[in-house]
Image (cartoon, rainbow, N blue to C red; front, side, top):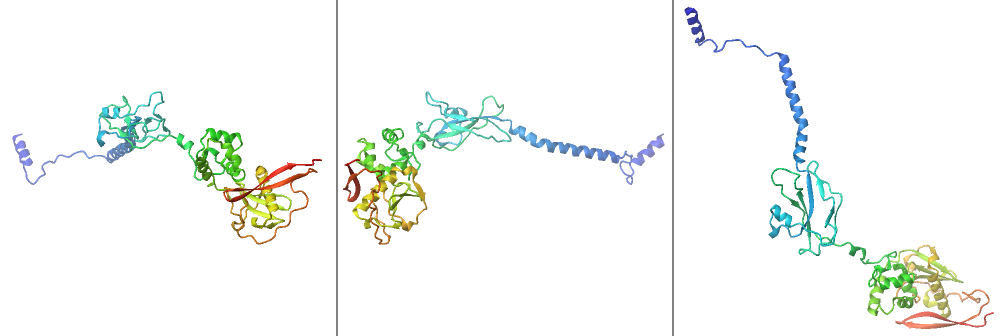
Length: 374
C-alpha cells in the first residue's frame, strides 16, 4: 500500500502528465438543443413583454386634470414652481358663472398620450389682471404613488368673446347680409326694427330702396339717424357688390335693364341701345316710370343675359337719375307711341312732369291729376 501510495504521489507530481486526468461525462447533443430552445423562448418572452412593460410604466400616471391658469404664471417668469404655487395659479370662475374650463378636463393616458376632443372656456380673459390664460395639466390627486410629477402648461393666450363675432359688420357687405350688418344699424336696435317693419331686411333691399326711393328710406330711419350717421350708413351700403346678374323690364317700345341693386345698366328703345342724353323730356319721363315700375316689380323681374362691360351704363346708387351711356351709338330714339303707355282702360289722366334738382343731378318725378273718369 505504501509503494502504491508513493507511486500514486509520484504520478500526480509528474510534470509530463496533465494536472487533471479524471474523465468527465460529456453533455449530450439533445441537452444542448433543449437549453438553446429554452434560452430562445425566454428571449421571445422578453420581446413580447417589453412593450407591455413599457406601457405599464407609461400608464403608471394615467389620471390627469386640465385646469385654467393665469397667463402670467409662473411668478417672475421662473421655469420651476412648487405644487402650492401651481394651485394658487389656477383661475376660479367669476361669481354666478359656470366653471371656467369645461369639456374633457379629465384625461387618461394611453401609450404616454392623451387626446382632448372638446375643451371650452366659458368666459373671456379680459377680466383677469394679465388678460391672458394658460391651460395647465397636473396629475389628479390620489391617482399616483411615487415622486412628484411636475405640472405642464401651454403658452399664454387671449380668450375673446364670440358675441362680438356674431354682431360684426362686414366689409364689404354681401347682398344677402342682414341689414344690421351695415354701419350705425344695430341688431334688434331701433333702426333695425324700423327697417324690418317696412320690409327692408337685407343689404340688397336697403341699397335698392336707396337707389330708387332714397327719400322714403330716409323717412323710415327717422330723425334718430343724423345726417352724419346717414352718410356713414349709405356709404357703407354702396360698397356692396351687385354681382353679374341683369334683369329686364319692358314697356311699350322701351326696355330698361337693372342689376341686383336696381341700378340702371342699359336702356333700349325699340330694341336699339340708347344714351340717356339722347332722350327727349317726355321719353326720359317714360323711362323713369319704367325704372320705378321695375323697382316695384323687383321680386318678379325676368333675368336677362349678362351684358358685356362695354355695354353697361355707369350705375350709381347715389341717385335715381338716368346715367349716361358713354359709348352708345348716336341713334335717335323712336317717338313715344300715341296710345297711353302705362294706363289701362278708358281712364284719362292729366300728367304733369316735375323736374327736381338734388345735388346738381336731375330726378324725374310725376304729379298725377284725376280728370274726366268715365
